[in-house]
Length: 470
Ligand code: NAD
Image (tube, rainbow, N blue to C red; front, side, top):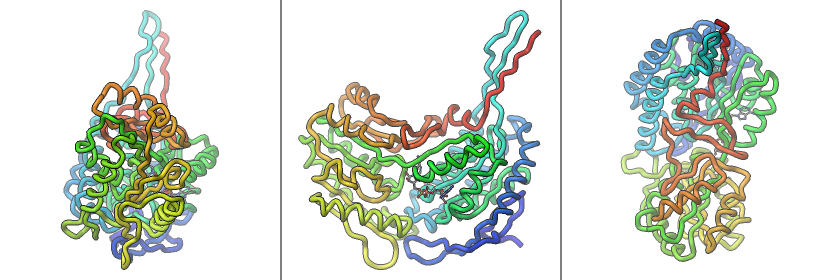
């Protein structure tokens, strides 16, 4: 029988045999569906299926893999409405953002399909030829978070498949449904066992990251879990890509045009209700522009329409889960107690759903939790500065280093400052923009390794040097 939301192991739908958990709609707090977690045996079955499938898939031709990925992209397009609706229901974002997530899924899949894996010839002399090849690693374990569930699964899976690996994925228990549907669609286009998906929480996560049948783990999520994964991965020296938390600073220089940048600052700070790894999370504004920019940001925040993402006209959805909502509330309350000014928002909406309006907090500085910690929610602290060297130091005084930005009318000066930011991506007059061809990843405690572009593809390979004596 075909279940609506089953796991997929070796090409077959399977219901987990461990404890069940509810998947909630964050806009209504109603239960969408109850899922069961996988047992350790079911995880072993998934890994074994992926290992068996790898024996053949690793030798599939480039043409076969490219065609398979394009067929998957076609299928995602054909099921775009179903997928977008699932994303809204489980994640909470407004429909236009969910549609953008599905559109991104198609674009990234097609981009990965078209990438070519290079063979480098480092010597070709009379007596010798040396080539460097990039071979797939084996079974890749993908562990995803709850903020962009479909998009992040695609980011993990498509380059891994393109490079010839097979997959065992574990989505967040908070948002597994769009990923389960994706796997059902991918399975229709791929040999059995190439893609497998299991459900569960940290118990299955730990078993995956310790599993010696998995050669690499790609993880997107919080820094503490990333640290745990790194410890577990030592079991078989798993390769890792860790895309972890960030506390991105944006610096507005005195020559910036606030009329031009205010909307972009708002949208990149509050993207997905602020639940985006590389959202702008600390905004440093020069004294001369401070009051004017705060005022503009408040106007934009107050023009948002909060509501269920399925309702027409909604521009701002709920926080995805109660724990995150309570964390955001605690950070804002603490800031208030420390003397910061809450210019708008600042209180959860009463009634059903985890709604928290977009909140702008001013007269706040480093040393307050809302500035020092990643809020990962709909609140932006705006911090006053007067000295540029000092603000660069303050932007860099974070354990994390995912992204950063500089906002200015002087592109040359802005670029010079951007290059001094300690982060994986520094934007000028923008933030949080990710593209299939631009490598993206963190430094410091935001993780290591990159996704996207050829550099991202090669993370799913190991090099092999072929040394031929003629
Ligand atoms: P999380 O770390 O709590 O969970 C992420 C995933 O890890 C989930 O699937 C979860 O079930 C699983 N997990 C939990 N414990 C585990 C364990 N011991 N072993 C293996 N897996 C385990 O993160 P979250 O709350 O879902 O996501 C929010 C965080 O993710 C934020 O810090 C955010 O910045 C970060 N994030 C980073 C990026 C990036 O690209 N750098 C992108 C999105 C989110």
